[in-house]
Length: 309
Length: 291
Image (cartoon, rainbow over all chains, first blue to last red; front, top):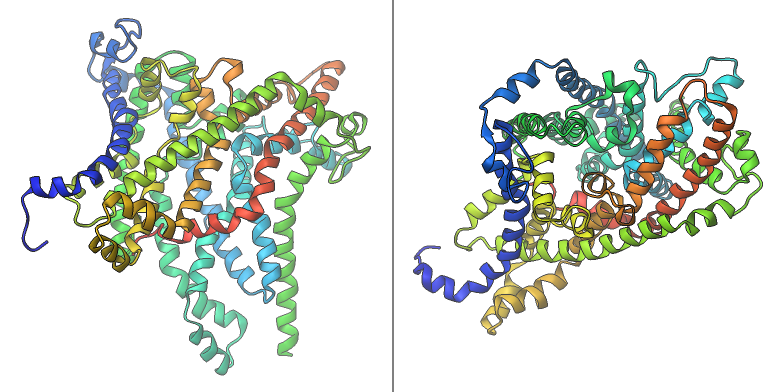
């Protein structure tokens, strides 16, 4: 805009654009902004029935400052949940982040597009199953009467209580997440490989480069910007260790290794009806998550010139 | 010499890739096989990757359960109505925001980005839904997924990349913003709309946690919550030490029923998936990362 027309005139001409924005803004106001008022109950002794509705009861409850924050920080359970969130996220990054890249590179080496397409169709599929379904599948496979334990028994090995043993449950979490998402996560790398300059490969062929040299000197460097971007963004999302997954798969026998912040919030607030503590932990979580996402996005912009918004 | 080296690589490569394919497919095949096998073989642990004593009895039994029928209906309703509302909200928000000349665009964009990155949390949302008397209504399930800022940005980025000249021409012919949106922009945006529509549809169909959080009434539980309840029951009993024999047998019958429930709640997606896969893939590669 080089010369600005007065807003009134602009509005008269384009009022329909603002009209279009109205439903979206109203929705976001009611369902995203309004609940933020509820954050106050982290600083109050909340009595849900103190007002005409649970929301107005917040106003009627007494201020207690940081009481709930201080109390929960000292709780062993909360510290364990925070630690588990970090550990599970880190394990997922270390063990699962490289696999889609490897998969994309290996599948790209296959000449037959028919094979490529069919395998992609198969490995993308679990992404579209809900965690309730995937939990059901893994319970079926891994319970003491399940097929994996039957196979172990047939080989003369001891049965493993995969879903109830604190020593193995995290491995089940990592594996099932990989099973569900490795294929889907590889899409972005396939796209990146397809976008690489084909002349490089032709030149390498003329120079007599081997397959491994081509992968090592062309494909991987070409993928690097995408890898760096995805890794930074993945680290930014570290506060989410996979809530829907763990909520569907965990059980009291493995709380010590699998309870994460989200599941802890659910149990304290909707289980024990300690809503103030649940809100306090949620706020703690949201603030750290926000800072991490903003930080990682800024870092990604600096490092690769790309970002998610 | 060189040729041989390549073929060795290819053998290893195919082995790895086919293994990955099998690891993905076999667990699903195992559960489906259990759903379609006779009860005897399931209890004896004889069903591995193919139905033994093939029968549809268990599946028909699941389909005839009133709770199941109810939950299936809830999920169908929520998925269809939710996706429609979500698409409407997404498109109507994305279009004005795709206009770089829109006054006040920046602050409005910031509101949406903020809402995308910062959530009040599980408890404040629950308190709000209770205050609006939405808990234990089907609308709790509809509203909890009715707007994804991420999807909105996907659509907005696509709109921004459309050639401006067509719009300009229509404007000169006297077309209003609304006419341009519905007659020109939307028809040109079918790929991204299909993608986003599918994203919403799948996330509605697969969401079990909104049900857990907001719904306690059995008749309003969506299918995935119904399944979640079944699995939670299984988790609390199947592995417990020292179960009496009859309990084990009961659980294993439960195993067949659970498998059949998984089968019937997954089949709608699995039938549609091969036809729709390319739209999903497009969605992740088009406009998701900003250069």
